[in-house]
Image (cartoon, rainbow, N blue to C red; front, side):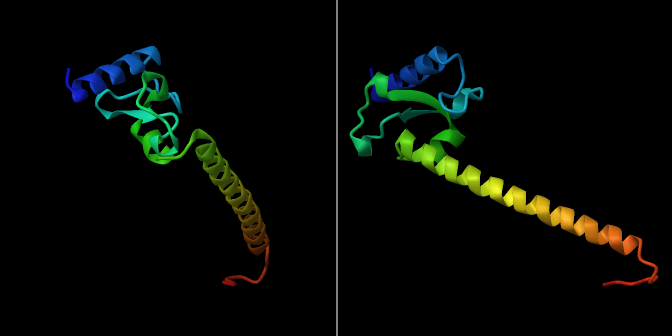
Length: 114
């Protein structure tokens, strides 16, 4: 059996074992957009054994890259915290701007623009 045929068979078996879901984000796997990922990357001493392979969606495979799961978790956590801080900042700014607009609407100056 050729390597490409073996890889295809492993990919299909893993996807079936995972009930057609990405091993990381649990989204449904698209048949032609499914990747095999090394849980422990080869660059970190991982091998090509089936125990070290997982079927994943393209997005997760691209986001994880050659990282270990621990490294990826760290990046995802940092990104989440950054997005959370940005969202909190945006909420403060929106509240402040709404308050400014509300005060402006109640002002008797007429066509005041700023």
